[in-house]
Length: 248
Image (cartoon, rainbow, N blue to C red; front, side, top):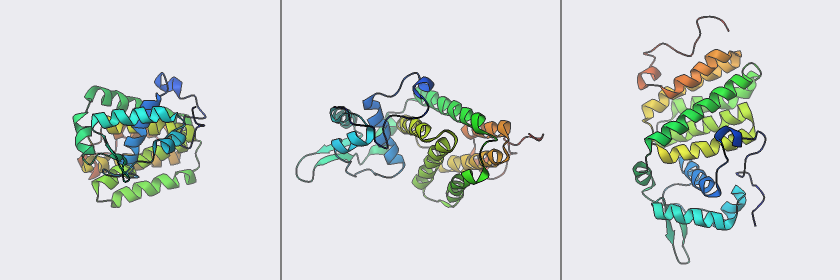
């Protein structure tokens, strides 16, 4: 029997299936959400995952679907199955190396383009309607990224920024949709260089500034600039492409 959707279950609010053509299968959902947990460091390589029944309840899918998905991830080398009293399903110690081997440039580029389209649409839909105080949490993440030295922490904070941005602009249902999308991206591309992540953080700040002003076109340009951010941009060597010379 399929469990009722939990906090990580099927999307609510907007019918996000029309955005991607279809919703994720149960196996895809398990895969993407485990990858997202690793990126957010709620579990680390070598850690034991919750039991299949717990995951099934959280994801709102059947336990047998979860078990099958975990088995496939074990076959792929992403997870390890251990037997005995201290057994269970564990994140593989060499998770990062396995993900690097699975790199799919075409699919990664397609997901990146879709993520860009999603965020541009959310910005265009909400620009001028958000009180500046709604952006305070996102600004705090930007400031925390500026201070972070650990590459894994930088990636965690950037992922949290995009999850929180999706919720701020589109609601809880869109956050769930973004969580699935970001989880898939974690499995399809190598982790970006920390200098690139810092450069992207300047685009985050630009975006928040423009959203605070209610300037839709510059805000959309900031989202697009994020995709092509270069390390020297974070050092201020290049002009800010998201700013408009004319008042909006």
